[in-house]
Length: 458
Image (cartoon, rainbow, N blue to C red):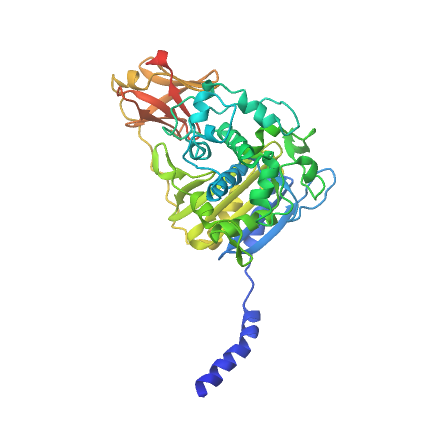
């Protein structure tokens, strides 16, 4: 009886105890956001933090336009850039769970009109950046939905620079092709399919690919620096053929719904919004990053460790905008940052959010790199021209040294590992090489793109 009275007293006091708990202090984070906006000449940003699987902070900063001075709000739309890739990956993973697509089957089984080699690629390879697709420029075809299909059906086998599944290389073109696969399976334009498969089930009610829809909601306009000052970009950039890799309009409110479901294995608002297997597939260790066996690319996001914490992330740069989503799944944590300046993702802001909520290990300085002596064979092992579509890197020998020739510039190289050359004042820029069957380097990786040694260089 005494125990029951104690329990009853505790229950009666719980509301008061909860109310007495001090609210989280986000002043440090807010100060960092404001300082970084000023330091980077960024007009505005929206920031959200999820902790313990729920949104604990969401706020707009600065202005949505330097011309109107309208303040940024958390329901305001920004263009995401390449963070879109995560959502295209989620859409194809959802189609697979619905039995409408086999991720490891040739895409030619469901998508017609493609060249022979492209038909043999798999959706898994496309959305894990392991298809060997060159990173191409997308031509402007039309503002209409048919632009995507017209572009990819016009590609020849030459858009592949590497054997499928061989190596990681960042390629928006692979996601353009993945978007076309989604169109073919769904029988709808990419934008409409994304609404049906991802946005509506998650209650992302304002999120859209269509600029004419985005402009009917509160919208942050894109800016670029001119003479050191942010100016509104006119006309706003748009290319329908590029939508599957970098063109979603969304807000931190809507993105928080996606991230919350991600961290809860598909559950949102007390029910399953998307199959749990979708969110298990996205961060999968599908292909290792060259030179870093502990970092992987999943389906539209990176999976890596930082200061003892496993993180999933993707950022996006687009004309007028920048975005970043970082998640720490073991801690139910995420930070979302959207800005209205070309390529700005507020790195110090995301770092501060992680410091406030995650048990990060102390930062350790990178070990100083030491130049190793070049062997006579190294000039043959590394030398040659490496090609990825329109991009080329040439490793050439001159005066007993190796040099990187890129876009008309030459950089002196030092050997810093068995299969690594580096350049820069502190050798901070690395080139990782992957050995071929002949014992010489077959591929080069610069931290983002890979390229294959041309036949005439072998």
